[in-house]
Length: 250
Image 1 (cartoon, rainbow, N blue to C red):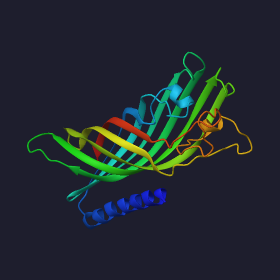
Image 2 (image 1 turned 60 degrees about the vertical axis):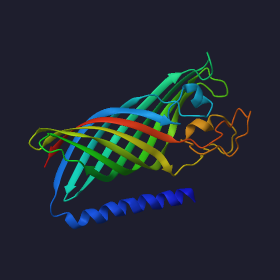
Image 3 (image 1 turned 90 degrees about the vertical axis):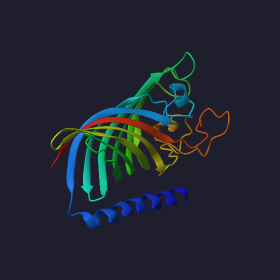
Image 4 (image 1 turned 180 degrees about the vertical axis):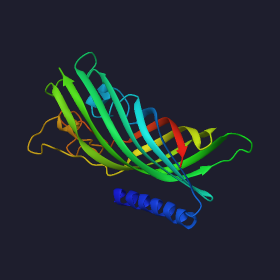
């Protein structure tokens, strides 16, 4: 029921932005560009490799982001869209002083939502605030070496898609006619809907099943002290994103 309600909210949000954009589409300006940035894991997306091995968090560290951004400017309304690729990783122990874990995840995201620009007279800067709905596609890999309960090997993470929302803000600096620099920061709730526990080897009862899928819901077989089922609660995937983008008017 929770996922259905979240999905309904996201659909309503997209329809809302489209309805308000259509009536003034005759008077528009369009900007597009690309950039780079930092992405920092938040909530259960961060933590240590020990947290990851214990099923508490994903244990990822700060990574990088590459993105393409577009803005459609309307009379009294602006719509922004973004496609970005983020890569995060971390390495360390599985337990204090023993075992080695290397984690990496990649996220391909598509975001769209409205923005509000705040004009400052006689100044070449424009602050803005925005919100978005997003589709996130997760993939990745984990390497275990000398870890108890898991054979030493490299294991791929099965791709998973989640719906999310985000808020963002920033400042546009005018560099030249039709060119601007966008300095932005955003907070993303990346698994608002679509959470699940997925067992890729249902005929076997192994701890490795914990790490083969995104598994952001509680393991239904979890029991305290059971070394094969360690995810005892749903995990929230959030991130903070800082970006620099060069935009060109068309």
